[in-house]
Length: 362
Image (cartoon, rainbow, N blue to C red):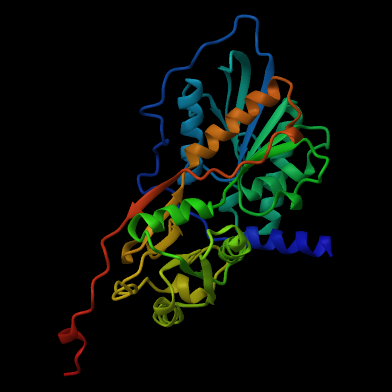
């Protein structure tokens, strides 16, 4: 059964639609404003740290992770580039973390930009070979594709920090593996705080989700937390949606029986084609009259929803703190896995009531 789950996850990760390179083509994100190389230790590094990322510099999440590395450790992360065997590699850099000299190497695998399993396996094998040659003291992997194609194949005595992971780490690492990390998940208390800002009396909430594994997983995790809601608060319904018309109908039917709506995902990787083929109706939330919070970036961001967005920089900072503790001698297994609740809030224009004259028949 576990083998079947692994095969299904591999197919899902390979089938995910990916971001496209920036239109300007040649820019290196963060290069223009990156700080100079930081302090270097004359006696050489105490430890070697390898950072393996699932995407490329054209992916906004990845570019911000790398830029945060440069800002926190004081170096230009886009310098000293090379391309060994399908990979984009930067470094090694001599940096200092928590007063400890470190030799840092960064590998952008491009796993997220490859749509077939054999292609992902080839990139994963190249990254594994790079790591074996590097022999790092600690590996930081970002994103589920990196955990699946690289992390789970590492020797069991290697120390690992993960970040940006949506799927439970148990799929990649057994209970005794030397791992800790940072989940890319939304905090229910943080979402509720945003709702209560605009609707202090809210007590009942509807969870809406497309039919993708990521969105359904968020909805299920939130529903399982109902027991920790304040007394008198409850989820009054959930809905799994397969298209824009169905979403509009569900909002109309469920909004009247709740104080707020939480959209756990629309148009996420693996959802029905109807969401990907069409655009969000501009009046999707018109007349709802209730707070609508979308876990974004979302395809409904510009329809009047309040979008909460996980910050890549927060993940990078949390991972660096864990790395510092591990390199000082702490067992990774004793460090709790984190789920940061610091999110960016994006507010679009408020949806308006539809114009009755425009809706009247000719």
